[in-house]
Length: 102
Image (cartoon, rainbow, N blue to C red):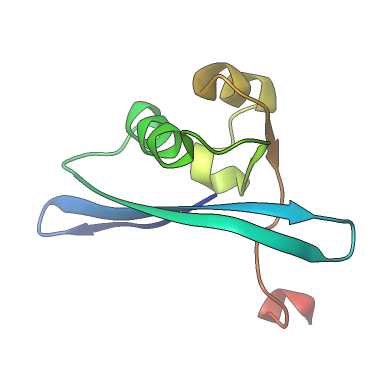
């Protein structure tokens, strides 16, 4: 799961939450089951709004929600699990090659 945007434009925040249902192994992305995108506009940002868009985007998808820590304000994992009501982990999400690989 990833949230893109969160930039203020004319007093409103534009966001897109993307969720991918996939089977993964330690070395490979084995299979993509589905991809979901949800758009949201808001006058302000807070953890409630962010958690709502994540829950809405991931509803019906099974497995663990994985996200970058910044997407959930660097909250402790146990708090995020409590807010989302399901299993959750943090990780780095990016595609290689990346400037971070240098």
